[in-house]
Length: 270
Image 1 (cartoon, one colour):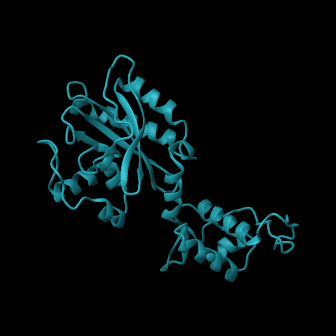
Image 2 (image 1 turned 60 degrees about the vertical axis):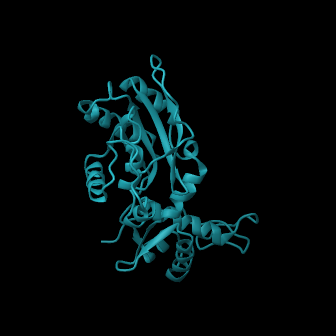
Image 3 (image 1 turned 30 degrees about the horizontal axis):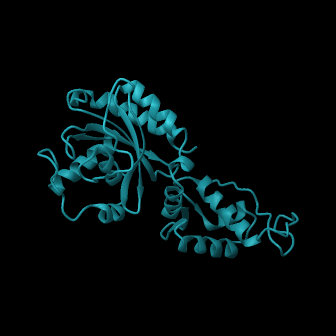
């Protein structure tokens, strides 16, 4: 059964009316209009994707034109094709563009959600984004009754923090191989330096929806983190709750994990 897709027919270009018969503005480029229309159609098709013919029909394009435009978008990583099924889906290039734009552009109500998380948990709430292979904290909120060190602007260890573990756990195998440090540096006695143990921890993180850290990067920082995902399941950012081991004890991890998962879903684009 082919996926149902819908998109507005392209209506731009200097060369006259498009396939829908609509007049074209002299300031618009028809091929760009068509490419954007196809990109939206691919997005509407969801994670299962859609075939070239179905996408072309939804945009008023013949198969050959649709295929050429989709192939061009593929060279930029904006869409990807499953050669076995012939279906097109959104590509990692869109996530790169979103990340470069900054969390405040892509995500919803970031600071307000962090404030709510800090109030609900009584701990520090922070948001990190992945840029150029590194995670960096871009926003954080402290509970009003707690004085805490700021992590804003600092880069994050990928194997020794709950934030970094989320980035690894929700990465594709290719991305994980690129992001994983060659040597798992030990920061504290709790740091996981064995790759087999780390992969098991990442598998568990994906299974329950959040990652944990037992003072593995900094003995005074224990916490949980959850992924903020786009509509295709690609990682946009990581939401974390952290605090000292006297308060953020392992018994609290499930409840704090639920808070981060629910808050991350509120930040996700719709």
